[in-house]
Image 1: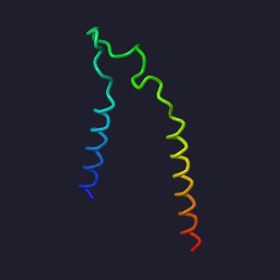
Image 2: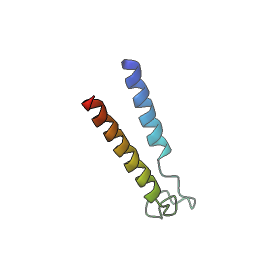
Image 3: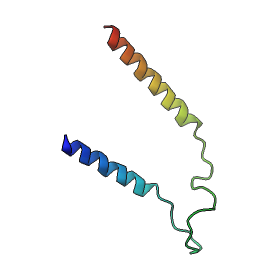
Length: 67
């Protein structure tokens, strides 16, 4: 159980480190204020996939509950 908790903590901190703002290429020192990385990438497709997976998961759980 403790090993699982350690793995979760490791991946959370790894993810936080990977999502950090990159340093400013102009060297001003402040990482904020500019345009967001990704250039306004569309998230509509990912949201649709997430909602479909959530609906399938809920349907499966409901089916398992009734059987």
